[in-house]
Image (cartoon, rainbow, N blue to C red; front, side, top):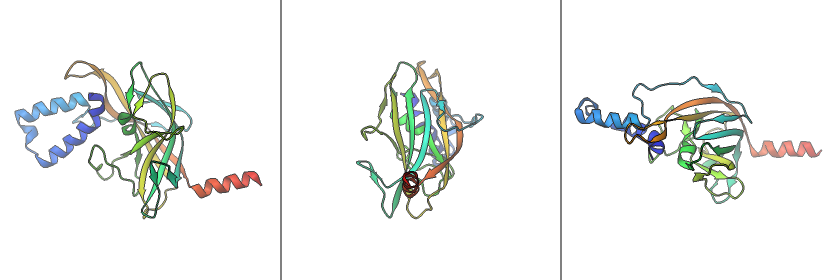
Length: 225
């Protein structure tokens, strides 16, 4: 679906422009650009006014509603990733649900939840590394109830999930991290005239406190005393 391809096409367009700067000046290049625009790539780099992030408040991102709960450093996610001397795992706990009557894909969801400016956090996006300074999408999202990967979001259901990123173990553990949520707009694709979720743009951003496992243990001990 073109909705899934919006972020991918935008990144491929940047790569193509770096490798072959004369392509877009040709007739063939104009055709390629038209396809990219239909898929969500905007050569004018449109921006939207960012709303402040509020914890425990639902955010409408178009295809999804996302409610951010907390951001933690975790020692491991069983069956998913284990922290070691080389890496650590950052996990954002959130509640998500799909809007509309159609099943939404997990790939679009993880592209919609990004960390910005966190040292040592890198992730592949469709086989390519994000450019330096770009927000990094979550590597994956997992259902908290059973640890399964969230590949599809069914309408009418609510999921408690963990969005995960791996951070270089040599980097300092952040005390706060900037979260940027990316929304999409339902509109007609100029390619096949179907209605799709297109035009990915940041909608909500804010800083979250990052909790370390030791801090959580200390807080629990203080509560018991």
